[in-house]
Length: 530
Image (tube, rainbow, N blue to C red; front, side, top):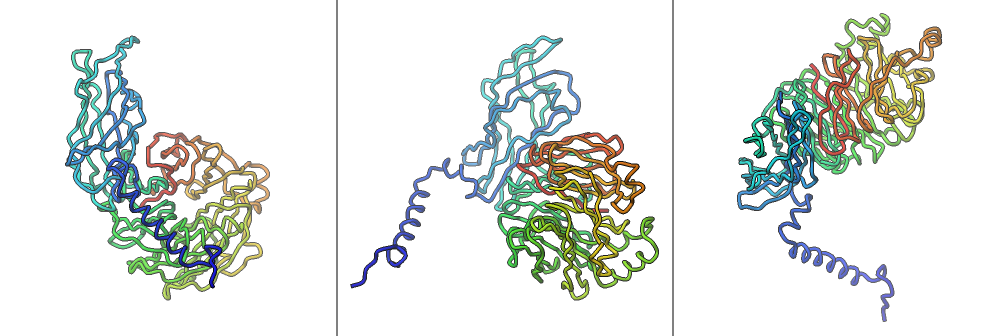
């Protein structure tokens, strides 16, 4: 007689437990109401984001509390987009854009926005007067069709001066528009990890132009650099894929599964000919880099690197060497000769305190060699300064910036290829080289600020002793995660992970000139280079 004392030894009970679990899930789902289902955003593949903007100029000082905003479908079903009250003042919102909220919704047509306003007041000559509210509430007509796997952005524009009637009645005047196509050369792309989308920002006015729904937990982002058909690539850490965005429509064109790695964290693009590119994805969870053909979207190779690859960069086009005033004649010729067939990919390995330098054969589309260089504690970011022939590596748990000599890595020299810039401070989360102004910008996580330093290494003993490295600092938002410099080298754009916005810094005045709201927990940022 056979005995079944445990589930492990009894295959029949295990089967019935699994079957019962599945049936229970189906029954529970079947018993849910429409509103209960609507509260589970993972069931939907459509997303709507709502932004609010004020007038360019305003005369009246009006404040009102926006208690909730709902979107109404064609069949009359209403779903809340925001439910946390927001106090809005006409002067505070003047020529500004704020993020109201986002919601995953069923596919279909939507006809109205319904606004709940709790109170309103107007200030005249220092005296505050309460305003009567519209008796029927506020409804705005829209004509929006939500499609599967797409995000739609709505912009609610308020005409404050026209919103008070007879000096006592608050009857807000709004216009609603949806996203419109923009020139891709003027757009910035920001991944929002906890919104599963990408914010698209117009660099001209610093406002959100669109929102693109991508995979789960998007982090790294990069743009193509060559070819007629430009693309934006997003590394989705939670869904193990790369989303491909068409910047002319701001829609997903393709989804590339990463089969050879886990938890894609960072991404970079290398041009190997006038119309061909390779995509390199750093997979944090598997200690690998995936090489992907940008023409076929096929994963060509898995390359083993150090532990916890968190940042990645490639050699820029060889034309960037032209006019270099930092490299000597021999090093210039060395790099130009090397680039006739090869280029380097640089990978920051957070958990092994190293940088892996991958030598890639551009003709054969394969890796030839991997060199591992030791750096300081907990490296997290890097910047390629091709004009100087250097790689700058930010080390979060060290007050030293690591500097890698590119010509030495090309020669295969590893013993003294790494030097340091000392006393830059701890908690450095990002670095940008600015060879035109002979500066480096460092992004400090706590407190949130950008440091400006001189790029003198440990070997420059005389200058290092008489000139401290830090030239100044600029305060930004909470817990910044990444930043970029625009192609014109005039502004810095800082991703503030803790405050869900972007700080725009003017390099000339060294001040934060604008704050741009984005989605929840922003992470990476990129745009097209000219």
